[in-house]
Image (cartoon, helix red, strand yellow):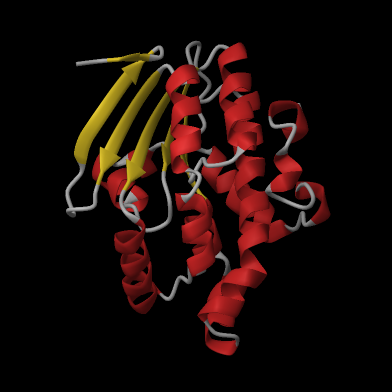
Length: 222
């Protein structure tokens, strides 16, 4: 099964597939992650979505999903020796530009192989693009239960958090990326409301995870 079969618009997110960058280091990263990919008769796909700075990583850590097959493109990038070396040589912004796409490609290859194993999958990703809508629909056809936790906050708060995070972790997030993704949140939330089995929408503008809405099978609960 190819990624394009699951996500026909995947080339909007990555310029080429894993075979173009395949190497022993990336194979090792993929193999290590897939050790947690346990086949299931009733596999589950859980995605934590939202713009950079909304609080996705903190939400995931609070739920301890990294003990299972947990895919985070940012975490993959930060694990790459080349990225860590370039932080000192090239600076935060240039290192991000250089290594963001390789990390994405590795992450999507982990995702593809996990789906082929019918493993439970926990994914941290903004989700504000049509390829991820296609992914959810494809997984439902393959018998996956789908669940999404969408973390929201206002643009000013997200931007401020991203700047503070860069000072602490050296991970750069382009301001234009935050603004572009923030402008798409409303559109994609409406779509996910209709297609995800269980959708939970949280707001963190006041630095707390406040549940705003819960949809089950497209119906608002409570």
